[in-house]
Length: 297
Image (cartoon, rainbow, N blue to C red; front, side, top):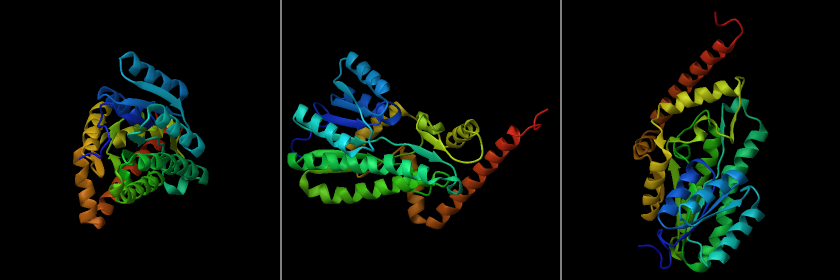
């Protein structure tokens, strides 16, 4: 049973960070279709405004806000403003994130700092801004986007995986703290979803010797093995699980098999991950050979 006062989803007020594209946009659209008033927040000002305008033109309640989730003062100001404006705050989806692909031996400290700032601090800031308001209301639901990379080994995206493991840990611990206080907390762990992030997207970073184009192509080939789910279908399944107050939301559901395997046999999980690494290295080496001068007749 939902806490008294929480609306799921008709009449709810929901803030979604990273709302201009990908998972954030799809969640915003599905929330609006289900009757929520959505506030789409994103650093991409023109893009997020266009998405909100499109939703509003369809007769749904939607507004846009330009937001850098690495700026706590801005996050806090937005959350407090929207809660005061609507008189309530039902949902906050801390969804904004970036990816860094490549081996740790090729990482720079700047790449590490950037992904920690967005993927971890961005979630922390959203929680710290929304949680006090929800405690005062005695209702609310925080949904933090992590990844399957936060549940199982994810080599070649190790910095990304590190931040997502942290988000999983934060969310599970906060869920326990908040349970008796009327506030729900869930962590979303997508498998491979068909979004621009599959090939790096606008906010993806690749490290290593190969040109970025070759790495993006290799990423698409790699992730294509995992049957990417349509992002619209994904959003609908996610919100069904949010409505049921699931602690850890894994979509597509078949990815749970890999999670279960990792818990049942961590050693086997590491072996299988190692084989994937070797396969990707072989693929990248082939791309490098093809790109070398004189490699084509």
